[in-house]
Length: 311
Picture: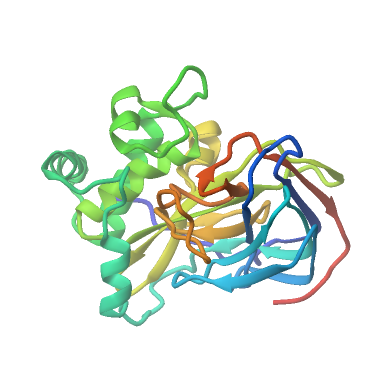
């Protein structure tokens, strides 16, 4: 019998300020410049206050159909932007027992069972997913998700060497059996959806557990799945992969050392970008004369604070 997830303790909280800087290099040449950056959002596990935007020219803020907030600039010269905010982040714990959660709407269920470009739902993925849940003797949504999570954590190595990692390409991840958080969660989300379990992708930044202040080198992403009668359950397979002692914890929890910016993949920005939908959106994205720009300047920093707001 699979171990039950029981979280009786009071969720931990963390309070910090965050700064996000982005700029198109001054050496970029063109007639029309566009820059987009994600903005953090409120939800049941984080509160964003004192959000301020300073930019080199006028900006707009829009919200996409998934609730992602996007700041954008259009100008005739290379743009830059600085976003600052305070965040109160609460540990996301799955409560003990069932919650009697209402079922997803047809629209929500369809959205989170839908394949992504790099996480297709084909016969091969369905076959691999079935093999995992059958081997585990799993039947319920919770049992099947746990079997998939255990499989990913046990068979994928957190390893950012070589090429191919970091795109969340399920076929790369299943073949190489290594990668970063994006690759771990591509397998989990793809297999869950293949078994009829809605699953969704979120991305933001990790906040180092040591209190203080500093810079952040890169993003972190995580996932949730929807179990009938229980609701959305958090998982973080890559953190469990990095620290096997936390395998039980991260099936049913997201710690407080993070801030979420956007949800979903294959994103279309507002205003719509000329390029392809974004695989995921956490770093700044820019176009010059309708063509994507690489090597944008970007800096992300955090500072711990005393208590800001209560949940």
